[in-house]
Image: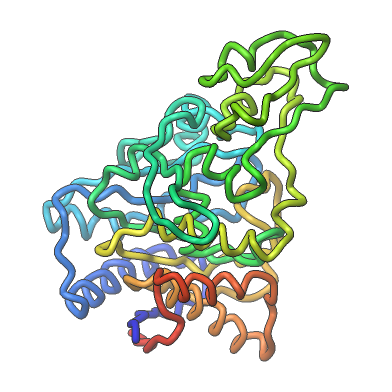
Length: 342
């Protein structure tokens, strides 16, 4: 059985309480689980897409930063580039957006390089993947503090610790692996045969005739072509994400990114139906719950769902719960937990 520590906080605006609670949660969790802390621990965060108003703002990480500083631990904010085209598609734009959103307390690391091309193959030998493309700077770390925002998600059902590990720690190609069959598609109506994608492709998998074409037998699914196409002609097949296997691929990538001494902190505030990657305002559908901490990503996600169900008096989110079952099956964590309220 895993332990999940929980502090009920009724309002996201109570910043001082949020930060002092994070310190207390860290202290209690580390003491209970007897966690050995590295001298350098990056903090995995989500900077929020441009136009989004409900992501977890940088001021709410001050308590975590203070706890680490008091214990002589150095930090950086660490994140990866996104699969879709937007303000967080490239390293340079991503860092600029992060700073504009107030993430200036620590150095910023975009872990998979300028275009999502830098990754390590992490061997897991599971049902869907033998190896996973984990962002290079994340793969080489010994320990992470994984901070998640619990909310809904159109494809995954909900976003929490598992999704932060899976999508959040994968390179662009790894994200593509999870969403579809690893092969991007080119819209011939948008393609201008400019050759930018072909010049960028590390495997020479794109040929140019009248229009660009991807040779599937050569493509390694790095998705760099999607990031550099100036005409937005290259995308992935999102329909592949609607099957049950998407939940399994998500769990397997989370397994690849998980480190046994990771610390998971989840902010259950601003709980919207959509993800922080959606660049527009969204309205929360339930009142704020609080903050949770654990060493088990499966248990902390289950606790979030249980708290949400209890608050609403019914099962609110149904899509995605199979992810927890499969994650437990492959050994990522367990759903049975003890909730310790502080």
